[in-house]
Amino acid sequence: MTLSISSAFDGGNIRVVAIDGSRIDLEIAKDHQSDFYQWFFFRLTGAGGTPVELRILNCAGSAYPLGWESYNACMSNDRDYWERVESHYADGILTIKVTPASNSVWFAYFAPYTMERHHDFVASVAAHPNTAYRSLGQSLDGQEIDYFQIGEGPLQVWLYARQHPGETMAEWWMEGALDKLLDDSDPVSRTLRRKATFHVVPNMNPDGSRRGHLRTNAVGTNLNREWHAPSAERSPEVLCVRNEMDKTGVDFAIDVHGDEAIPANFLAGFEGIPSWTDAQGALFKRFSDALVALSPDFQTQKGYEISAPGEANLSMSTAQLAERFGAVSMTLEMPFKDNDDLPDPEQGWSPERSQALGRSCLDALHAIIDELPVRR
Image (cartoon, rainbow, N blue to C red; front, top):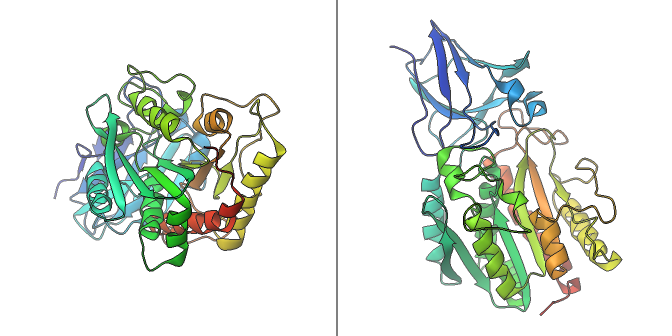
């Protein structure tokens, strides 16, 4: 059979440079109207039983070149189970050498979470008797910004994911978190729903998700730099979500992401906001400590540099919500590679582990929920 590469599907991204025998040279396309790129997702046909060499040539100019070091690409024969395949990065080129078992196989930067799966997920959650569904508005491409309200307690908890669409582990996390939250047999979940009202946006950036972007929406806007002044022209996704937050208030919030370079799960907080209080910071630490105790996949030694007093970036959601509402807010980062403290050579960091961490985060919230002040 003739080797062929395609990516003209939901979330796909790759460009063929050349096919020379069993070697295929590729490039990742930039996000539309942006210089960001790193996400790839493509299909290889005709290579069953044949050793092939896939070379992604433009990795050096990608958004996070350090993300390619010690990175292994994801591969699937059925688009359900994603395994890691040995990859090598040198001189700006990522090389994947593999002998596919099938004549139809998929490769991706991380296990994809397509918009089709998103719609199935939304339909399932919206049908649950404990869930109220609404669209908060539409994206620039005309897709709904899906929103769930769950629970009846006075504490206002916001969970939102995929501001950066290529960080697909964030929506896998959402599946795990909502599976637990809606489990009537789980006493933790029943307690959480009694003490808090959950506001959930499982995908903040549906346009970037469908277009195969790493970091931006349909017009090249990085949504997590829009929270100080969102607009209908550049960032309607943030505008409609922040407007709803202004109506409900925010006491506790998790913004779910993925990190290309750091091989660990970690939290980034709101240090450096003008209105910082030690009490607010202590609650953030209490949640972090609880999550360490509950999940061996979480740690606090690796992470981002902490902002100096008064130097928080209020265009980012975590800092904006902490400053705007006095919330205990945080950014959860999961790895594209693996958790080096607890590695899995077969899958690396995976959808299943992302789902498990989502459940653990709700357990950690339960551990501190009685300490959180209600702002309204």
